Length: 304
Ligand code: IPM
Ligand code: MG
Image (cartoon, rainbow, N blue to C red; front, top):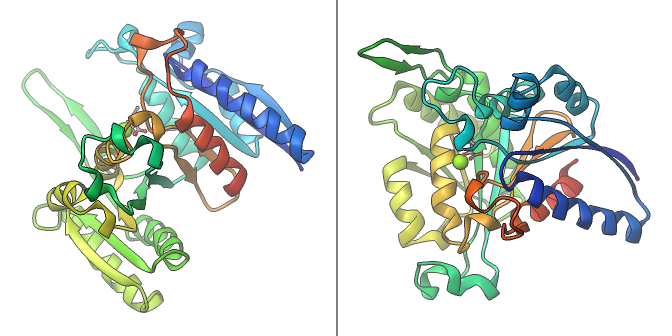
């Protein structure tokens, strides 16, 4: 197999962990007779420093021309002035949006060797093997933002089409696993969540009647992730809830440094990144755990 892979190391430990993942991909290529062509491009703070743009057009071109994109991490104290107009994270949100990768798959699996690293009791962790499907290109992350001296606002919008396509991805994955699907929302408060629930209930009843469906409010889901994590199989949720719940879920695996992710759209190309941040305090010291990025590279081989 021949493939073009764009590497976006980014900031902080991003370069450390992508180098390790690339080494693994090189060995895989050698062993199984693949040929991977790697191209590196700028994103995040390093791109702001180089060309005053967290996602330069040259990077977008490189990503669009690739079969898959492997990203390290973006952000750091150097660029995190709350009043800054240009931020590294804008580059990450924009590349997700430009590539149309609306389905972010975050598997949470416990490696028995690491069970002791989790703050939870071993008996609670037994049998944990779940997938969080996070909607990645909509919701409050992408709505209009306002700021005055005395107030600020972030608009959260979802369309029926955006909800349908992510729920379909989750339902298909659930069909291939144990048939259990949990949808997480905040339908007792948010209008977007009431739409989410209506669309989800209808679509699952019509298209996936055999699935065992559970619906949870996000606050309860946050609690159950700690009290009964092994009851979950596939969880589907909106952008911000998915962000928060997956950092929480990483503690089941013992470390934020263990969770990979795949972001997919309608085609086979995808964006692969660890769920962790740039950990600037340990950047360049050979201390960062590269497992999440290596596992993201494994997802890249599987999905793209
Ligand atoms: C993640 C990260 C990003 C997000 C940040 C860096 C913008 O926390 O991928 O979970 O919030 O999506
Ligand atoms: Mg996050």
